[in-house]
Length: 334
Image 1: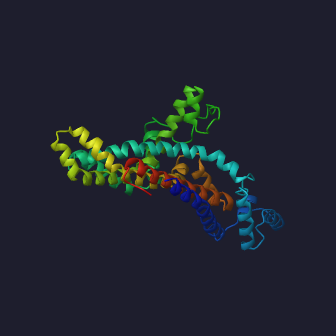
Image 2: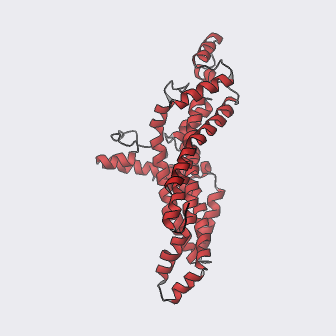
Image 3: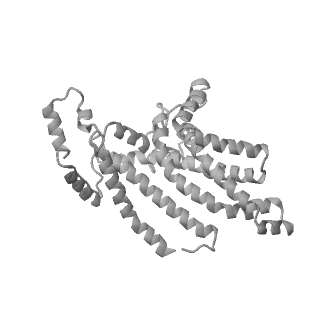
């Protein structure tokens, strides 16, 4: 196991290099100029030329790539043309908000997705099963941006039950920064008013991000549970007189969890990728909104950095999922 983990970790630099190379050339092939967008439509050619030289955009593309790789090997992700700040600092500012949103959606996936899939399989062909399958189909069919807009329309505009965007009410100060996640920081500092308000602001974006990914988890757990419930050892457990609760939720569900772990590991990358749309709709100041603004401004360095961050997170979460296989089933060896 240790050798396997070490090999996977040693592959991460190669993943970063490949992603950085691919995204670098893709972003630089997009029409448009970040310098022109930054300086505005009334900037003169002399100003544009000066700014282009300042950021090294006047050099051949291969030379720019070599310079970027050199900085990357030294841990420098470059400087944003728009904000004029190091990209690392921007990521440290925006990433905690995305982590908070993704964790809330992940909790929903794990708790609701697995529970709904298991109960649906146990009560096959019932109304609950039909509801779960309908939710699975509907979750795949509904675009995230549309679902987010509908939630804002219903729960903010019509009913006024929940906030429509942002992380915190404008009348409240952010909690003392410890992790950058408002809910956790408010809890750690005992700021109960901010805690409640930050939870309210988190509900709609987390629900949007979670529901559109919940369907896959529910469907896969249901399918795995149905297959497990038909196995001979389940029939034997029932013949020994074990209760349905123990048979279903101890023996069957545990042996179906490998499928759930696989799906959740893969979905973790989708949560970060899908956060771009969700954060844009809800004006959530995370890396998704940061990436969307960088794309509109043709700001190369932040786009590459966010893509690499998502790729590394995806690779790490899949490694964690592989390790959990051996924890759930001791017969598995690497």
